[in-house]
Amino acid sequence: MAQHSDTAPHLDPAAIDFMLDQCDTWAIVGLSNDPTRTAYRIAELLQQHGKRIVPVHPKAETVLGEQGYATLAEIPFGVDVVDVFRRSEAAGEFADQAVQIGAKGVWFQLGVVDEEAFTRTSAAGLSMVMDTCPAIQYRNRGR
Image 1 (spheres, rainbow, N blue to C red):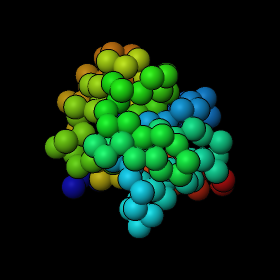
Image 2 (image 1 turned 90 degrees about the vertical axis):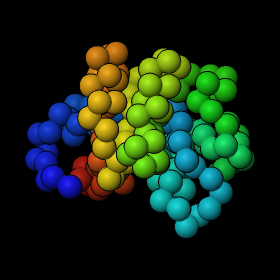
Image 3 (image 1 turned 120 degrees about the horizontal axis):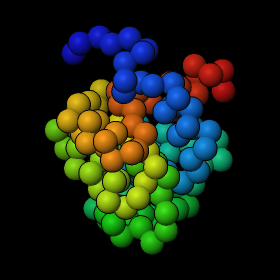
Image 4 (image 1 turned 180 degrees about the vertical axis):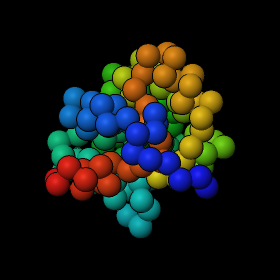
């Protein structure tokens, strides 16, 4: 995988700050009740930072005390950020769904990159970051 600098468009500090500081409701695609999975640990971290997490998983199970939904479209309230824990080849459809549900931002986790989804999502007016993790970004900020 090609290395990128911190000034890469998909690592825009303003987009990262916006999502971490101003977005409160995070739909987490791929979140299940398995505490060994990265999505679970990141959901816990987001809760510790005052975020409401919304599990999005085909099983629609309750995770960390929050009701899950099988799809983004089924969530009956507004979502600020769609945080995607899926492989790069499957992630783009969730960026498109984030646009459809009126989310403000899309976050693709470490190792997840889809340049075409980034272009579409940005063109639709959403903030988007790829190939990083809220845990890394909080740590970079000393939190």
